Amino acid sequence: MRSLYKFGLSVLLALGSAAALAGYAFNFPDPVTPIAHETLHMHNLVMVVILVLFFLVFGVLIYSFRTHRKAAGYKAATYSGPKNRKQWLWVLSPFLLLAFIDYVVFGIPAYHAVVMYEDTKTDAELVVKVTGSQWLWHYEFPAEGISYTSRLTTPRDQIDSGAAKGEHYLLEVDNPLVLPVGKKVRFITTSNDVIHSWWVPAFGVKRDAVPGFLREFWATVEKTGTYRGQCSELCGKEHGFMPVVVNVVSQEEFARWVASKKTPAAPVAAAAPAAKAVLAAAQ
Ligand SMILES: [Cu+2]
Image (tube, rainbow, N blue to C red):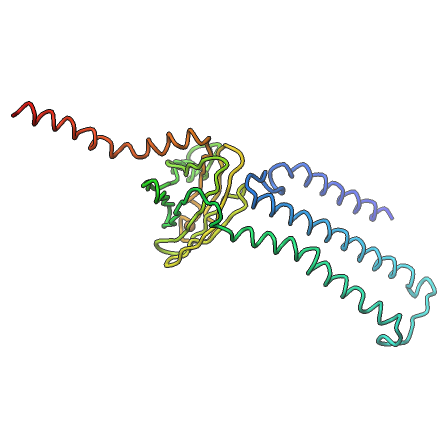
């Protein structure tokens, strides 16, 4: 009895410490896109149903073991296989219940979620092409004519343990992807070399970047902020050193960013009137 008590106490302690860690270790990150909300909803639904089934099945099992044990004087039945209607009902009902849960309780919302994930084209207001390379990301806004690379900025010192690790260790880049809040963004992914995978947990999206293929996903981010993720497909020796950082900003700020990204071409345009003036003065 004493050992049972100790076992119970240790289970409680383990659960307690798990709850304490839940803040950052076990929970989903706060969902900020419709897909992330849907994924979390599916997860919670499945988790609750599974927990109910778990306790129900194990409850019946443990109760049956205890009540029908030989030591308590229970005499075992000698039949094998279902013989009458009532016994067939006991055989078939768990099967039917599980089929109902799988195909209806989980199936319908899962179908809804998958159809939603794949709907990359309806109302997309912005297209971003994401190309994975060993070991950086390349972002392109085809309509806006913007194209740049995004590389890890964590100093080598921190990686080699020569310096203390920073707050965003291995999750910081030179040029983050910038997106406007509340706009449906259609992403197209591909790769230059091996398979990478673009993943931002708070967006609830992760799609492999496969060389030679274009794959799609979408996100409408509901909250401004900085979101971090990683390449999630083992892609070589620096797989752990190609993080994803997304700055989600207001639409005005995004417009300013787009304009500033285009400025490298501006001096050429600005030079044209100056050149004309020089030519005019020379005449
Ligand atoms: Cu990669």
